[in-house]
Image: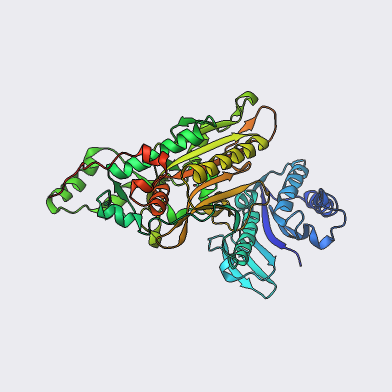
Length: 504
Ligand code: SER
Ligand code: ZN
């Protein structure tokens, strides 16, 4: 069983076809079926597997075609190959092709395809499920066909089938290395203890915290350690990445394929004319209620969302450029703002929140340079967790973050590409918390943003996210609040808590 396509289309010409023109069409069909559609097709492909025109009819100025195919020279590709040919041939008869109307388009995708694997998009008008295939009827224009929508629909269905098959196996997770067990000195939940000490308090928005001076001292101590132990030794330079991410960036980064349930969407006013907004402000002034529904009607967008993965909005800086060999590998980092994820039910303590702080490290260069930087990072992180912070940690290979964020499961096809998470044990509940990752992202980003390197070698990139909330949760969960139990370097970076607020 192989994939099958079938379409009918009308080619509309500027005037009626003459008998000579009809004859030319017949020749063109013959040519197409025997030669044109065979181009680039494996020699052993059967007739059934290759695109062919099964019937044609001329009525006045309209040429009606029926085309079927298997996987080679798919019916829609055949249509456009034939269009070029026939337009040329009929041009000689002073006939011009006006437009193409697709009157039907069907695809049969083999294999058991569950209903849930067929996307609910307006192009698909019906889906007929059989034990060994699904028949799709599509409503597509000629422009959709030229834009390869059928091929994308097929790929999407196949991806959904694969994801559901893989889904049963759960997320990819494979242990790479781990520390020895450490002596337990504390068994409390650091979030609860910080709340009790008034170091932090829930912000007014969901999944958001206000961090008081003592908590921020720990954040800054973490940053200091990362700067001294990782960023400076490897020579990363600081940049500031934007924190409002437009669709253009997420289309190139792949996030437009899957991140919708977790975005904090951003809208702009339809106009900044104060008179357009005056009644909204007045309504609030007299009622004390913000008229959210009315505001919604006066907004454009969403134009995109708040920073989600931190590194994608870096890429327009190098988009469309060719990088000189001698500046590679490029190593930069950003710590200029928050990331936002709509976490729904998953919010927990400071570990899982809607708004969080992170240092994002990013590097790019040749494949070798990119892999080498990741491996240097692993060495330095390991030293930091093991010798400096004396943590109980483990490192695991997981589904690459960029695949997970596109809604994909499984592993990357190239063993060098992927994400390793560092996880630390939380003694208070016995779970492991992912607090750090290192990823080799392959050529995904350079390709998506069209970045090349001078030598012509493939450009690769990698990134590593350091979550300040999570590092703090891990440090306090394992080391507690008594600084006498803290690793010396950390204790030195954090001063004795000072009472900045006193509540009566
Ligand atoms: N950009 C990566 C992520 O979002 C690493 O921080 O997971
Ligand atoms: Zn990243």
